[in-house]
Image 1: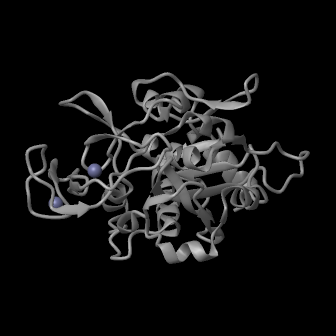
Image 2: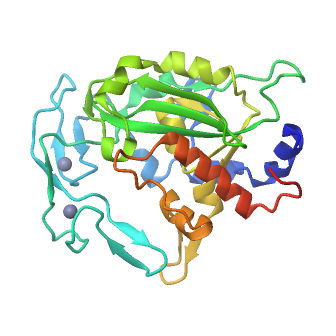
Length: 305
Ligand SMILES: [Zn+2]
Ligand SMILES: [Zn+2]
């Protein structure tokens, strides 16, 4: 199928301006040359002012303070992996042990440092906008690619450690390790699949984005699962997005709010596939493939991929 035709078929599924705002996607403010986010309760907590050293651990939920120079002292972090919700049974379970999920159970895992997702506010000035198309024959326009990043915990919240771009046929166009700017607290290897050794071949985030810009421009349709996290960590503003977390979200009748299913649950439900179950952590290539496959099931394309 011609790429331009596929692009036009999928274009109606892209997030609207309102959806980008509601789901925490970065926007560009040209007057101050920085990224801005819609003022939602969640977004407010993402960026810390220079005098705000308070952080909340994303594993054990404990609050703590960074040192005045931005470093973090060793503090015991006792936690469980995040509870997983099974859409088939409607129940939550812990993937790490047999304890019942809930605030009363003591964690089964111990690390010597807390981790957090909040970044320094001045990071907003490091964002860039994906490049404009160079004329109407730009090879990057009218393309549909899946983007996925693996993130690691650093002293500046979540940073990118691996970026991958896959086309609709599953061909890997880019798979690069990126070196986080700040000191890494945890590689989060169980989930990211990234290890310290991978950093030996890593390039800078800037170089990584330049490689990405050889393949995408602002018109490229990017497919991903909760792509706002990837774009935030890539420090990139890009608005032509199909987000499988939004596309497949369900309104929970009992709690009457929109529920986003994990990629793992979506793969189980719609593709009858177990993903992210590798002992080495999941890979961004696998995630990108899964997003593309999900899209093919949801959107009845008139022509096969
Ligand atoms: Zn902790
Ligand atoms: Zn546990």
